[in-house]
Each structure stands twice: as C-alpha cells, then as structure tokens.
Length: 106
Picture 1: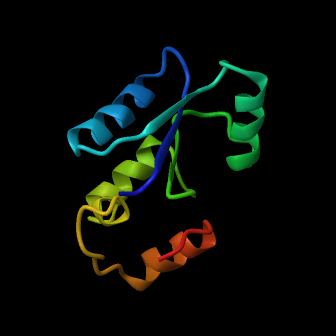
Picture 2 (picture 1 turned 90 degrees about the vertical axis):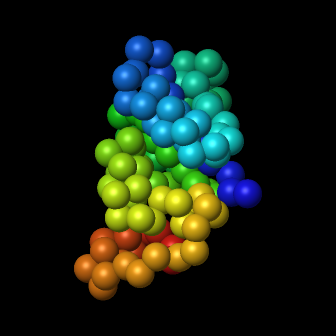
C-alpha cells in the first residue's frame, strides 16, 4: 500500500474533509499536525516550498497539494490509481504536462 501524509492544523474544515476522503476510500494516512513541534513546522515549510495553507497532502513522497488538488485527481480518476486502488488511468497530454510542471511522476 502507498504512504499518505496529510499535514493539518486545528480548526481546518478542508483538513477534516481530506481525512474523511481517505477514510471513505479505506486508505491509511499519517496525520502530521502543524504546531505540534518546531521540527514539524520546518519540515512542512521545506516540503511544501513555503505553503501557508492546509491540508497539504503527499502520496508516496510526491506532493499532491491541498484538498482541492486531491479532489481534481479524484474527479479525473487518477487518485485511486495513485493510492494503488486501481490500474493507471488514461490521462490526456495537457494534464500530463501540468502534472510534470508540478514535479509529479507518472
């Protein structure tokens, strides 16, 4: 199974929704709570290139982005593939280009 990491913060409805999405898919994830330690906060800033929004989600070490990004992957049929739940979907060239520009692998 894949490794899913979800950076969260208190009082974040999108964080709750992201965790619920993974729960509904039966996918285990590691919740990394910001503010729990200075080390965790530094790790978050380094891995997300200074992002200030949560949640931020990584699948097998690849930065997917926030909850809206995860929803886009889900609607495109690509999230289940990234989670190891389905075979690789057909992705159009434009989508591949956008993913490549964000540093994602296929």
